[in-house]
Image (cartoon, rainbow, N blue to C red):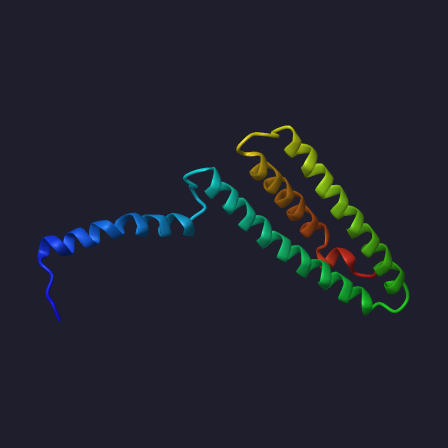
Length: 133
């Protein structure tokens, strides 16, 4: 086994610093360094909220299955309204993005809009709001 001299070891460590800094910045969305990082963070946030939305939606559908009288009809209406809501969300965010067409933040604007609408819909699909009474 060969021993490296101290200057050689320092050179190796210094050459690794940019990679360590890059890896560290990819883990944090608190202060994205550039447009690509900001877009990646916005996509990550939207994906997480979209998963939460799907879980909330599935929970309400399952809950509606347990209601004998109005459950099946309500479930059909919820499915239809969810499809329309997705169409609305996508169209609304596309319209907002259009204002920034050609700009470097266009995709981030779209994803932020998608995230905001999705957060609101998660609140609307709170299972306590869908209890039969």
